[in-house]
Each structure stands twice: as structure tokens, then as C-alpha cells.
Image 1 (tube, rainbow, N blue to C red):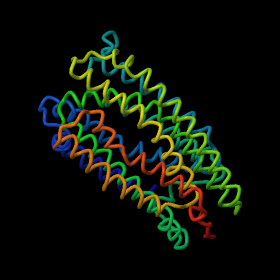
Image 2 (image 1 turned 30 degrees about the vertical axis):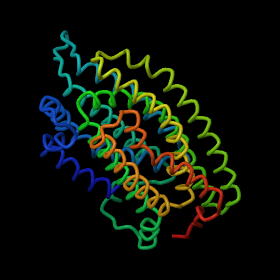
Image 3 (image 1 turned 45 degrees about the horizontal axis):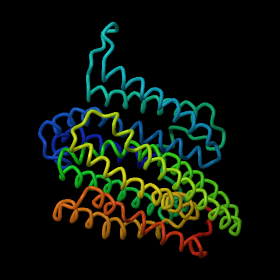
Length: 360
């Protein structure tokens, strides 16, 4: 909680002060930069409530309460859609004007505030295992506990931070391929993220269950659970790939876009149909199974090597230097998913990914 408050505050201040400069990193079009800056000025307020609610909901899930996360997600979904519709298009008889991009940011902010309120109320009034209190924010952690956090938690933070930076760089590469490519990717990523919701759920469940199994010292059972979750992820990946392939072109038709943008979107959707399968497998392995076993250092190395030495350089060369088709550029930018799916599956077959818990 202390870390997310500090980092969230830093991101909020930087985003609020330099929205134009941040947008210019992604795209050259001045009109898009101006609209994006409007969005960023408001989303600067999202970092703290969203970060705190994520920490709370994940910690609560880790001690066995997955229901709260479901309730929060459903509530956030309804609030997000409702507020986005109201603020983007306006409600004249209520005196609410149409605010466009600014309204979209306000809608998202409302959803994040609702998430935070639900988490705080539950944590302080109803949660009985953690018994967390706000006074904990000003207390220093015990030395032994802090050591375990550094050993297992810090690599995961570094890994996810680098993945977040990499996602930003990918958006920058696609944005600098032109406004049409950026618009097409924005369409494709909607369906892609819809499919990866299920894979994210599998990864989260795997991390909690295997983490608890390893914590009890039941290492052989952890192996069996890992193999089971991998099989489930393969099934989910196939289903997601089929969904993207056959629903993708139909979903593109829902948007009012130019013919050039449509053709690029179709090409990217075909690439996404390949990508989502490997995304499902590597997500279950890296964010769930192996992380639940405490193999965070190995995963950090895998993320750094395959994304920063393979995916991003290859994607930048194909997209910005050689001007290859959007299909191959997107495949190149996600080539780390394919490599990690194979490498982490091999890792799962051994025993080194299970790190015995230490008493703190």
C-alpha cells in the first residue's frame, strides 16, 4: 500500500503536468495529441484510487475471498459504462453537456472511485483475516517480512513495471506508423482484451491456489495443479483465438472508419487471433502458476530478455524501418508470448520453479 501510494502520486503529478508531452511520445498528429491531453489531465486522478483498490482486492483474493473481486468488477463495469455514456454524449434534460473525450475520462474516474470505496469499506468494516487498519500506512514493516518481500515481491514488481513500459513502447511504435494504424490497433485491442479477461482470471486463480499449496508445503500437489491450470489455459486460448478470428471482422464493421483503417484493422485482427492463444498460455504460466510457486526472479529475467531484446526491437525495425504489413508488425511485437509459452512450459516440467516458503 505504501509503495502504490508513492508511485501513484508520482505518476499522477507527471501526467497532470505534462499531458501534451506524454501524448507526443505516442503520435505526431496535433489534433490527436490535443484530445489525448484532455483525457490525461483527468486520468491523472485515477492512479491513486485505482492502485489502492487493486492492492486491496488482490490481497483479499490471496487469502481466499475471490467473491469480493467479482462484485467489484461487476459494479465497476456498470458504473463505467453508465457514466461514460452520460458524460460522453450528455443528458440535456439533466443539464449534463456532451463532453466527448473528457467525458470518457470522467466516467472511468467515477468507476475507479466506486471501486476504492467498496474496497475500503469492506477492508475496514467486514474483513476478519487481515484486520488491516489505516495506521499501518505509517508503520515500517518487520525486517524478516521486508526481506521476504524483497526476495519474492520485488522481482514481480520490476517485471510488471517493465511489461507496462513495454506496452507503452508498443503503442508508441504503432502510433508512429500513422493515425490509421493507431486507430486500427485501438479497435483490435478491445476484442483482444475481452478475450484475455478469462486468461487473466485463470492466471489469478492459479497464483492464489498454487501459492497456498506451496505455502502448506504440498509441493507434489502444486505440480499437479500447475499442469491442470496449463491445460485449462490451452483450452481458453483456443476458444479466444476462434472468437477473435470469426468475430473480429464483424466487430470492425461496428466502427465508422476509413477504408484504409478498416483494411489495417482486419490484418491486425488476423494477427491477434494467433497472439491471444499464446497470450493465454504464457499469462497462466508467468502471472499465475510459476509466480504462485515464488519463481519471480526467473520470470523477471524472461520478461526482460524476450520483450526488450526480441519483441520491441524486431517490431520497431519491421514497422518503422522496413514498413512491413501490420500483420507481421503486430506478430513481431508479441513474439515474446510465443517464446515464453514454450520456455515456461519447459520450466514447469522441472522442480526449480517451486520455492519453499520461509517463516517470517
